[in-house]
Amino acid sequence: MSQNLVLYQEIILDHNRHPRNFGHLDPCTHHAQGFNPLCGDKILLTLNVDQDGRISDVAFEGSGCAISVASTSLMTEALRGLTTDEARALAGSIHDLVVEGRETAFLEQEAYARLKALGGVHEYPARVKCATLAWQTLRAALEGRTGDVSTDLRL
Image (cartoon, rainbow, N blue to C red; front, side):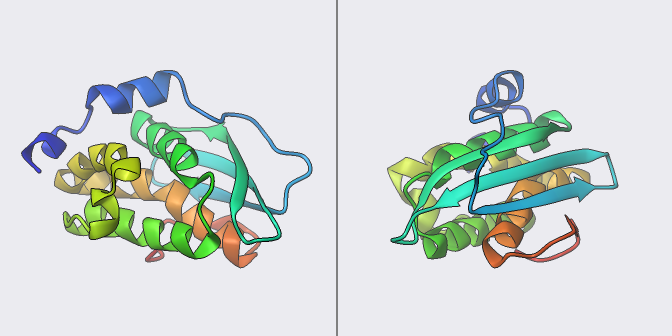
């Protein structure tokens, strides 16, 4: 895990400079807004869940610090094709990684290995809310919650 202790790894910088899936889905089946009042990060997450309960498309709009944008971009890449239950489990794994510094078996899968780059955030408690905003917004979207997502909730 020592490689994860670097906050601004190249993958984080790349996803901040060139966010993937940036845009808005219209129509969409699920959406939520997230706001981190601590540093002003804002996102609007839109996604489509198909009849089989799989995320078929995902996009986001917004602005924020490098960690927030990169975390959201990485999340959108990882979500496509997952069931809503798998997406919730992945969000929980990110919480464990970023908040507790603990890697779960989910992140050992090759498809999600890139998300380990968020592990460096654990060493910078002031940045935890930046990294988890997207994942909390995802949970809100999947649960159909309205209003701005609080960065104070556990995933």
